[in-house]
Image 1 (cartoon, one colour):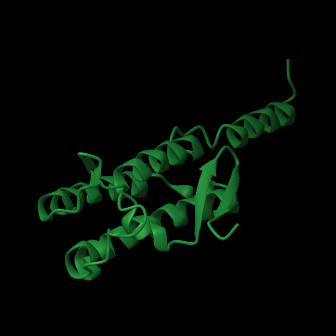
Image 2: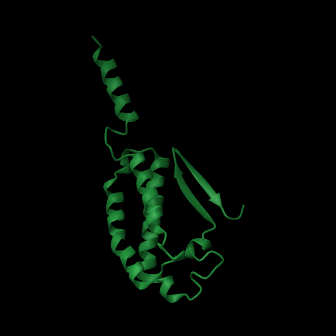
Image 3: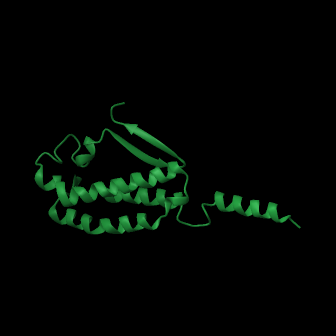
Length: 144
């Protein structure tokens, strides 16, 4: 028979190592982030990014579903670096929401998707991007 104190410590260790026994931990955040990045990119029509009013309206309609999925994840018990990941994903979603509600660059900026790689549109302006991989942040820079 295991002494009560050792049993309590063993249970606590299992709970800590498995993310409080909840299924909505970091793997769910990474999966959501990967789906988000695919959703965020404009669809291609004949090899060209589709920034038509209809395509952007469809993207705006689908955005709240991603925001709800993120809100359903509770990062409160996660280690701080993983909580930061959650906030980064939230900030990206809020940024796209702001683009749709306020900036609307695809409708207001004639040069929005005419750069060297039109399928990337505004992404060309981002000098740095963060990628969630495994348990670490990977920061890439277009400046080298």
